[in-house]
Each structure stands twice: as structure tokens, then as C-alpha cells.
Image 1: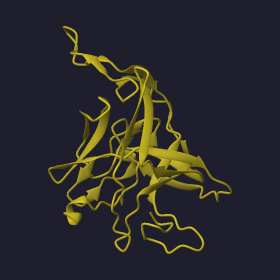
Image 2: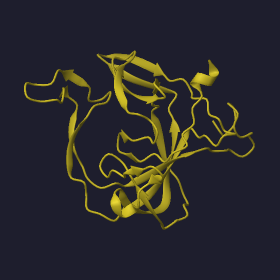
Image 3: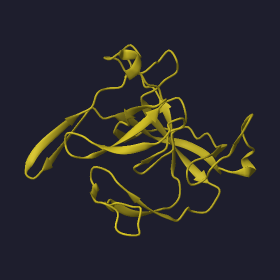
Image 4: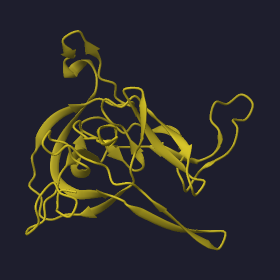
Length: 209
């Protein structure tokens, strides 16, 4: 049903490289699709939704906000109590939001050559509740963290570095993927809508798609 496919990104989305943390989403896991690739899948209210690909464009000019915010994620947890988030000095990471530098659009198709055969994958465009403030784009702001780099070793799996085997004896991490070190946060990506001059906003053929 359309109601079940409708989605709106209403919480801030820290987007660092290929790692996506979405407020309110219970987690994501890889699932195999047509190309035999791993795709991120988010769980909302017990149901799973595919996290879309995004193609990010540099934007100019951008107005610097220079606003201090505290962000909580898996590397800088921000605790909760019965009345809401705890004070910033009890968790999270304080950052300064600078100027926007990227706008990211959902990818509707991706073609790759695999074993000398070109294979294309098409993604369903999300339906967004524009009247409710939803957005299917991302607008990414430069941020300046106040703390040191995370310097945490992690293994990241995606369609370009997929799982190749089960975890070795004594390990919980499957074989394959790409081993990287998480350094410093660079962007804060917020849900956004875009409108193009001469087109109605919030329609499939308009700029709000």
C-alpha cells in the first residue's frame, strides 16, 4: 500500500563516508538483491525498508551557520532519561555546524559491469510526506568537531566490498569487506526537499522529488 511505502527523513542524518546512522531507525543489515550485492536495510516499527543510494553534488554558495550542536551516534553515545536527552556534558560530541557543501539526491538506477556483463539495478523512488515536513534529499553541512578523532578500526561491507565468507574461528566479523579506521566527523547531513524554478514543488515531475 502507498501508506506503507511512504517515508520521511525527519531526524538529522550524520553521513560519514558510506556509514549512515538514522535517528529512530532500529538498525540496518545487508540483504542480497538482483546484482548479488549487499544493500542497507533499515527497520522502522518492525518493518524493513531499503536505505537508498545517494549521489552527492557540491553546492555553492553556502551560508555558514556557526551553530553549536551536540550529536549522539554509535561513536559518541548520548544518553536518554525519562524527560529526554541528558545534558551535553554527559555524552555525545559537541560540533560547530558551518556552511552547507553538498546536496545528495536519491539514485534511481545504477549500472555496473560484472564478469564482462553490464547489469543494471533500478530503485523505487520513495514517496515523501511533504506536507508533514518529510524530505528525500540530504543537505550536508561541514562540521568542526570539538574532540579528537575516533581512531576506531571497523570493517565496512557494501556492494563493492561484500561478504566473502563466514567469520574465522575466534572472530565475529565475516570475511571480506574493507578494513578502515574511523577518524574525524566531517559532515552533518539533514533531510531536505528541493524545488526547481518553474516546476511545482512536491510533485513527481517537480523539484520536490
